[in-house]
Image (cartoon, rainbow, N blue to C red; front, side):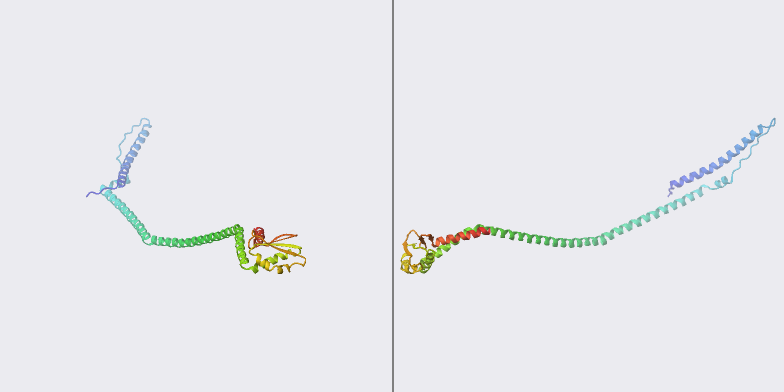
Length: 285
């Protein structure tokens, strides 16, 4: 099988051959120039004829050595240069393959060893960060819930106070009605209780010379039977008159005198008590 020569080496061989040919031409040109100079010098001599004799061509030592290099030697040099070039190319390919193999091994090591380790570490850090974030979020939500609960409680207290203040007059009115019914019932059922109330009312008018006592007819027999006890409250010169009045409530007791009119009935006392309590409530608001 024929061997293909390297183009660079072929160019070097051609240049070498050209150099050898150039050396021969230079030698011939130098000899010819020497002859021309001598010819001009001979013409300057008057009447002297000189026959020009050709000299044999003398080849230089370099030219003779160049001629010794034959085609076989040139081919050997070319083959040696080609072998050297091929060896360099092979070494470069082997080096490239080795580098490629090292890169592949590094990639495999990263994929199998380091990458999972970094991923696991990142996951752990992310998990831990997630736990911390969750705890902090829980704290924030708990604090917000507590603050919200406190706000609701405070608003409830304020609303409760407003409702109580708004309901106080109503509560007082109901209390007075309930008290009136209870007292009225007690006075109706307990004659001694009603008599005690009448005595306290008469004491307010004992300085008068004439006192009129107006009561419900249901209470009249009992009060009339105790008239002497009531008259004992006044001085000796005071006159006491008892009058039944069906327009009054059973628990009512009206006293009239020169000083004025005293309403000692339960309803009037409850109204007075209500007015006092209402004033107190309005003063606190």
